[in-house]
Length: 211
Picture 1 (cartoon, one colour):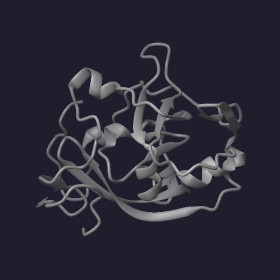
Picture 2 (tube, one colour; picture 1 turned 90 degrees about the vertical axis):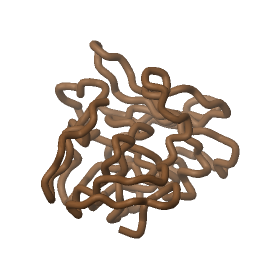
Picture 3 (cartoon, helix red, strand yellow; picture 1 turned 135 degrees about the vertical axis):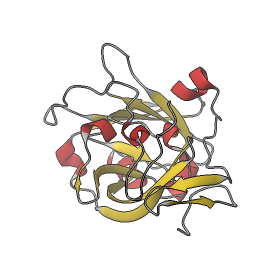
């Protein structure tokens, strides 16, 4: 992942629009399904209309990139936990992982990332389909993207096609190729806050909530 270019106040780095898979030229929303599985097998394949039955969430939260920049935006979607319940999952997430899988492209294949499920639920991870009042753009993860705001963006798969609850951790794209930290937790250090037009030092790990 390339480091973002310097930005002026209100502008976002180019890497915010980075998409490991391409992105696909288009996504047929009528044909798209989110497959959800656990160690026992496939729990369900949810359509876009299925997801509309879940209570909507609109939250202003700060996204942080491992390339040392951050932006606060208004995110719209549904809670990860609610979607898993919709598919019939009844667990707690403790001691389990969640493997995310992208739609992928013929040229670059499928992008995957694994995160601790219990932590993601506790942090109110969102499955996002809107940002700043508009539809999530294709290059930012349309039709659906999971974001756990306590983790760097490389742990968040764009263009989701599958979520698998598992007992094992697997290396993701950036852990394998660039040696990024396995847990992906946001680290205390200095970041460029693009929406505020300034740098700020974060003194504790995890989700940034104070700014």
